[in-house]
Length: 281
Image (cartoon, rainbow, N blue to C red; front, side, top):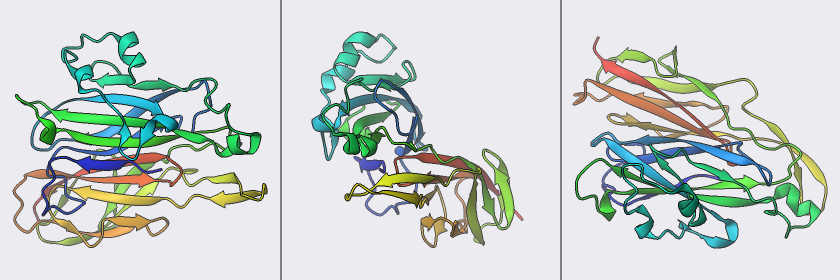
């Protein structure tokens, strides 16, 4: 269950891995696969390299009330929200579950969320839709400035509910670089770029097939890499082949830049990490 991006102001010439505008790169739910009655909190990787990020508005709706484009949102709900003057009860009734940086997003799954399903179907469950609108800190923000993303949050009574993968480090040119650390690279040089995850991040889980039989399966995570300048030979790596080739820009325009990796476990879980590269021999 992957986050989908709807870029309103995308440069048609930009590669998928290039972060040259406001982008929502990932959203993680905790717990990753809640049960009815659970309260879910959210974290996100929202990057705004050109203009400061003003904030993000978060909405949630049921599977029945969602579409291929997330939840229906009344733009009037956002009026007057800046400055933190928000009535949480009113906005929650309308579907808003958070408004960063003032109100951290959370969603409590209704206790009867799975009542319409039979016992076998409850093990696989359904989903809730979370819809995010991120906007830059600028005057006269219009629709083209807003980045929209959404995420399906699985809700079930699974005997082996999902957990988010934990990305602990990236590796570049054979060096392990912990999350948030900085490494020096040579302009124009190509490096092998990979990542490491905490033990247990690749989970084995129970799955009930259409014949009502229980199967044991193992997750098949994949990673997506992002950068500001330079290039990748490919932006994806499927575990356990966790490496791509990163070529640093020959003539960097930035003194330093970030490299990001987002790992998705194909069951709705997400984890990410970033490092900073600076240039020089």
